[in-house]
Length: 226
Ligand code: SF4
Image (cartoon, rainbow, N blue to C red):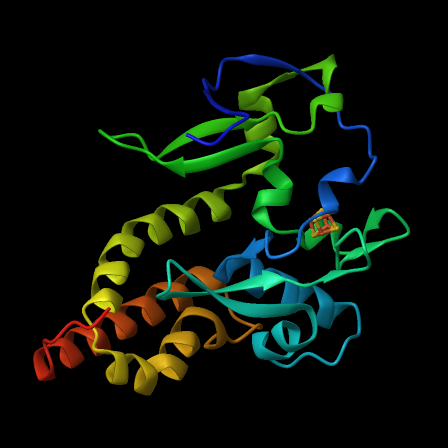
């Protein structure tokens, strides 16, 4: 478990109050990971705000950068600006994409991790911003009802189901195979979305195609060099 993090029950009450200080939106260099649903939502929102965004790749090119998790899993992280590494979406100390902010921002100071034994999720509390705690009172369940909507839950459940299998399939690729497939992997994970259509069916179809592709590749060259 991370420092300053504890698991919480949905019935717990936490003495928390958002001070709208925007401190949670600073010091985020390589820290704010955008999942496929965040990327879709941000792209759609910015397009609706009049920006020239046709697909998710246009949003990512302007506001995010790629990275590798554990040397193998491709991710995108929000860009930051200035000496305090403020989130690229923080403008005049306010979130400029509030309605479409990433799920981790919606949930904060709570977080979510995969559940076990019939539970979809575990919930946790991050206490690193100590000044938030002491005043106010938040029931975890109420916070989740307001900030973890059904669509986000359905996505995250599907995402947590596919990630272990996807991780294994990526690990099994040889280095040259991985290099040859990286664009397709990025496409199915992050780019292959029509912003005018619902997200989840597209995500499920993309993951099915990606897993099929990786399984076919594994048959061709079982060597593992990672
Ligand atoms: S997306 Fe909005 S809420 Fe999240 S870190 Fe950036 S400015 Fe803050």
